[in-house]
Image (cartoon, rainbow, N blue to C red; front, side, top):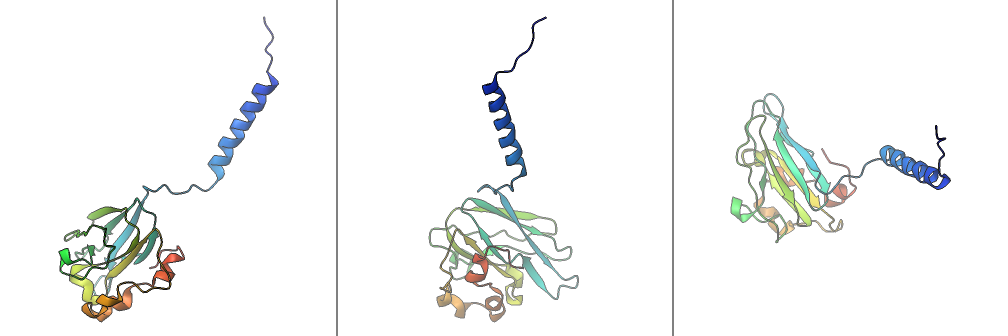
Length: 175
């Protein structure tokens, strides 16, 4: 029977590889650009209050946002402020407009954001109740309030519910 011997260089290589694998498994995993983020559409059981949760969100270009209607007794939309939807433009010039149409309870709608900038959106039947949201893709100037030239064309409740760019840029989703 032949004795088994280990090459010292091979042992070093195997230990280093195992250590790297263990380190990789223990470190927090960075989200890939394609990770999906969920926004809930919901409200109180009697419908007296409605909301997007989170209503302020910071994402990277290439990420997908999925809006899910979690409101058992109401329909909602996730609709871009854009002339295609009968509203003033409040998304970047190069970005495409979107409208989920009416989402029944449990239904969802998703889009991938590739163009950096500030995106404002609303729920068609609940805009006057302040059901609006803001997504920042990439980065934005925290010192500039976007789209103020269109403020006069929006309901006061909607304007009151947009989180500030500076607040969103802190990186924590805003409920």
